[in-house]
Image (cartoon, rainbow over all chains, first blue to last red; front, side):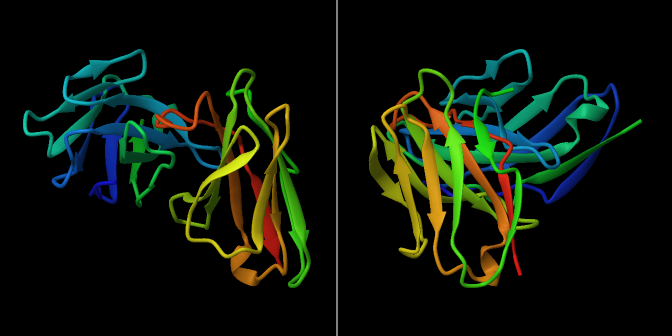
Length: 110
Length: 114
């Protein structure tokens, strides 16, 4: 599975959009981009995934660049409960494991 | 709430002992994966069980072993515990073994080895 690179940490103001970047320059054509988050002392939680089109659900939006070498997770209106470590993961459709990197530690401030 | 339950939530062992951690998967899921998360690190894949058979293993020694039962619940066993085994052990279930990008994680079992 392709390697991903994310900023170590970022702050966000409550009520504002949080834009979390992820670089996956070695991604293959059959690999999906998945996002998870882990709130302190809890198990990771699935957020969203995509292949090449932009995706949106009730939690977030995922923007994937046309060359698929990077993506951005957007939390449209960050709340204090969105404070967590966010992981960007690349996996094939047939993959049977998630490879977590260090993630981005997001702190939402009042 | 993911419907994945793990027990115990916390436990303390000493070096050389053995431990068994348990996981009940979400209803309808036939695949269970186990992950180890050391403090300050991302989770690391230990192995996956699909329909009672091991279906992939990460870079963990043989003293890490597992079982999956006919009801798809699972156990993780660790023998000859070492101090570095102190970690949060996460269980995740999914509907099938492949295309397992969307996993449902439990809250984890926190193991401390003294």
